[in-house]
Image (cartoon, rainbow, N blue to C red; front, side):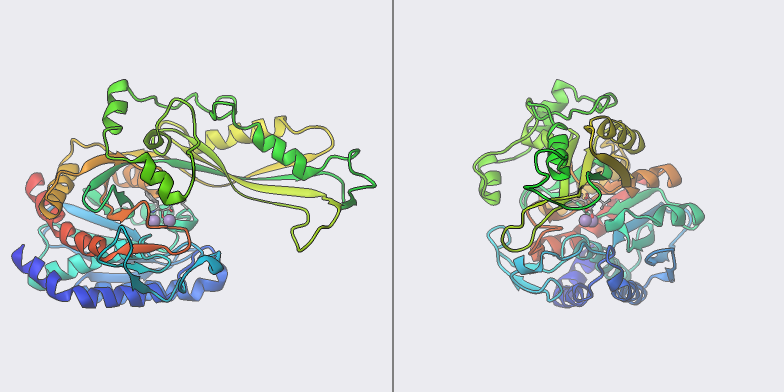
Length: 462
Ligand code: BES
Ligand code: MN
Ligand code: MN
């Protein structure tokens, strides 16, 4: 380990420079205008994987963006770790809210990152975290060989629902066979409070359209007599929450697993300051489902949120118009044992049923994903825990996260392997927001922790 750590220590500046190069390529998977840059990013990963010493490095075409694969098979008798990550990023909009260009990485100090953080889209989610794995591997290879077999699968469509990765995994089941999947795409609690993510929420994402008259109308001549789709849509959306902010869709909670009092008590022992939470977001109060704490509301409870809503006149000044149409994108975060297809179906049925006369309502479903919970009594969890104890000097706290990585449940289904969610970001790193950043401390800490994971995993499996 000493040689590995020395190698990392002396490579730090270069590792950061390489990450900066990677962050300059705008790999926005959602926008076809960036398709070429997405490919360039995949090629960058191919080169770096090869340079680090991986074999069989290949760029696999899909119906969408390419998947990068590479491996280091040391000995078939050793356990195999499949490292998963994504090189695609969310769109950077709204651009005017960035203090520097989303694809012009800069390093700045922040209150939570006194050693500096790198600001760019994808810095934390997930280029910075994914790249830690390449550099950890490089350090291991340069000083010896991994104590496990390693396979790398880095995709370019996570932010658009991993639409082609499922097929790829099924088609290359033998090639990708593994004992465990390791990914860094989640958060710790704080830089001095390590954590391992043991749960992710699922997702059901809907789009709705409400149509009234066949054209926009004068709001004086027709207003009050013809349905206004925006008024109607607002009312319909408003009715989706009860006064206690639970979700008002019949059957929505039927499959929700309630935690025991002991489990709830344990999860609320994790360090959390409501005052800091509110201060960080500049809000005077929080708002969420009655009877649950903020930690619970953002992990073990399902939610429903409007992500965007449009219609009518939104230009300069005032235009008196009774619009013909209104639209919204509505997502629901799911918890065990909710099924995304069943929830989408319940939503659709309910939403259509509450449409008043005078409008037509259409509900369509976008991508979804299953929630995931990972056990803590496994060699892989123990290995991750021991690795963090080595590098943080503290036992990490198991925590359930509110975010979603839908492909995790598929890994278990296809490979029969559990995932270890060994993330190093902070929830306050503004992923998907303007000014996304990733701490240098976090980047280096990840690179140091990963080799320990392999070492402990190999020992515990032996
Ligand atoms: N890395 C995130 C998920 C995440 C963030 C998990 C923070 C835990 C903590 C991932 O890239 C992501 O953004 N997932 C999407 C879902 C996807 C289907 C677009 C999400 O959670 O919105
Ligand atoms: Mn991610
Ligand atoms: Mn993301």
